[in-house]
Length: 454
Image (cartoon, rainbow, N blue to C red; front, side):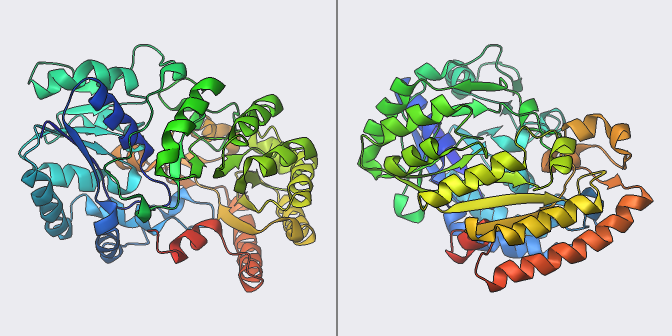
């Protein structure tokens, strides 16, 4: 076997791995023998047990407004130097070595970077890391001798250029970053042949990359690929036709699929020509015409990044979409009976308590327009505007290094006024979370977990 492309736990198995399917297609195109394996199917629950054993809730709590950080992040910090990871790493490495690959390409995310490195110690092949886990951490990860190469950012051009050279053992840079943009017009059709698609709810497809927004809490505008570009409609239609052999349920793996009204209507007109169902994440900028086309095109559910229902807080966050636009979107979606999941962030630096109370009041008032909600607390993300301008928000960054870059979050010290506000805010959000649980509007990710897709 020349090339083995793998995904690792911990991964929510909601959408089939689009990134591996794209690389598989490129490998086929240039005549490289390859195979894709998603080890999360088999090992998610085992890895989760290891993570929970390593859980130390005193670490990284300061990266979150409420002192609530993902258990995955808590425990991954200790996985790095834990002997508990060896048993699982050896099992996965043994399975990989059975294929006798010359090169193993591992897609990574924050939860499994250190698992990937540990597995690499036991592999007999060259190892490539890629995926979202290396976006901000590659400068640290290049110091690990277990890793031969790191592909940063979009890799259609770099993978095609270098993979044969890596297989042949030629001398190339350890860290590989694109030196020019990839034109999405030439996107390869994802090849999902190696996956048992019965393990997933959706087939992944991409319509754009990057983000048109500049929200101050988010780092997506600073990923190592262009800020925003769209895939031509004709290319998308070509992909849909080819992917229908795998099924008719698609997930749009975009940051937001409606950068403009014209764009989302064009997409829907293409989707409506085929008997497909899809789910997507949208900006809360939807009128009745867009909702009509979403319904006609076969949308199953949409996710909206609402964040707050206070214009004062939304402006503080750098959001383009104010409360009037959000409510218009919710009402338009409700008119066409399109299920909607809404995400909220509480505890953004300098957020007033009155903004929180206003959001909660409006949440209750308009709860009939929302099918599920996720009520999260603010986390300081690596390379975000707040990270780059902490003084503007009155916070002090406590630590900044490898783990912070890997996990895309940083510990910070809040001023006393925010600490006091967040104690009250945390209690209010706790009450409203419980209320939405009682009325059956559980969080989106909780629904996914209940479907045993983890």
